[in-house]
Image 1 (cartoon, rainbow, N blue to C red):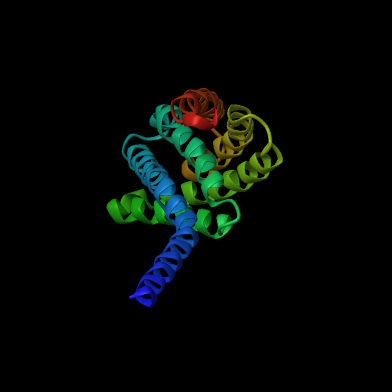
Image 2: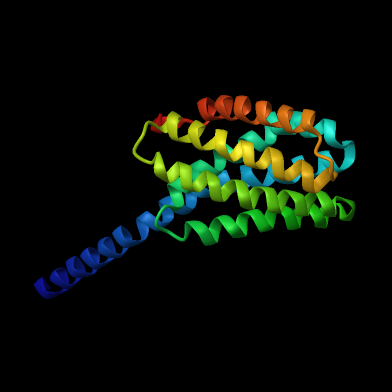
Length: 193
């Protein structure tokens, strides 16, 4: 009887050890899931709206949707740091563009421009965010958003709408993304502020 009790205690201890090893992965997955969904919904909506309504809609999208994506990207950076960040981010960007194209084949040029712009902007964002990693949450999010918004605001309109660049659209998108990014950083700040 005592041996059965000892064996049960060992099994319980083993189970607790396995749960401790699994817990970080589950926390990363659950924290990331909502931001992944936000990111994909926002990028697909922005791409489809821009494909339907043209360059002028891209400024409104920049404030509400692209700024949300830039800020969500930073939240995912936190969750995925040291857990395949680059690979996961590349898959996320590609998925958003593919979904946009699948939902509206006429959005192909917008989806490709979005993919290229987000790839460039996310690379810059990740570098700046990592450089500011030990700063206050609001500083690293908005510091990285300003730089990535500048990159995205130039690359996207040029690829989506052609040459010569639409300077008003570029300036409007940049202002909307940085302002919207600040607003979203306040909304999504949670306990990390």
